[in-house]
Length: 292
Image (cartoon, rainbow, N blue to C red):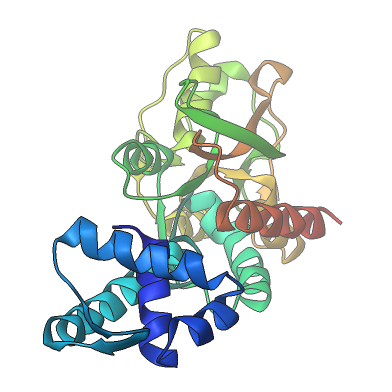
C-alpha cells in the first residue's frame, strides 16, 4: 500500500467510476484499475463489490475510506510540519545583558515588524549563562560577546564595543596603574564579559582589584557610579547616553588597559536557513543604526 494507491482509491470513491477518477487524476483507466487491484491485494481485502464493469463500495471499503481519508490528511499535515513549526514554535533567543540593554529593543521591534506571526521567547543573562543555555538546547540563537570556539557552533561577527571606565563628574578624570587598586570598583558578577575583560586587562599588568560593589544589574552599578560611590566599566553604547546627559564621565586609563569586545551571533551548525538568520539581520541593522 502506498500514498498513490490511496489517492486513487479515494478518487474512485468520490467520482463513482474508474473512468471518471482517471479523468480527474490525468491517468489512464487501466492504470486506475490496476492501482485498485494492487491496493486490495496488499491489504488482503476487497474494497468494492464488482458487478460487470461497475464498482460498488462495500462495508469494509466504506470503513477503509474513512481511515484512508484521515491518513492522507495527517500525511499532508506532516508534510507541512516544517513550514508550520517555523510559524508556530517560538524562536528562542538568548543575549548577554549588554545586548539586552543596548540592541535588543530596536532589533526585536524590527523582527516583529518583518515577522509578526513568529512567536518569540527571549532570555537576557550573562555570557556564561547564555552559552550554557545554547549548549543545553534551550535556545536557538545567542547574541554574546566573544565566540564559543566549538565545532558544533557557527558564529557571525556583529560589532565591536570599546569598554570604558566611567565615574561621577566630581571624581577623578585620569587613573594611573598605581592608583587602580585604591579605587572603589563597582563591577558585574564573575562570568560577565565586562568583569572578565577588566580583570584580564589588570592581570596582564600584575594587578588585581576587589569589587566594592558587585551586581548582576548594570543599572545598579551606573546609578552607584553617578552618585559618586565608585567607578564602573561600561561598553561604549551604554556609556555614551549617560556621558551626554552629564551623569557620568569617561576616565582616561593607561593604554595598557584598553579594552574591547568582539560581539557575535552564535547558533548550532545544522545548515538550516530559518528565522535565526532573519533575527541576525535585525540585530545587525540595529547595531548599524546605533553606530550612526
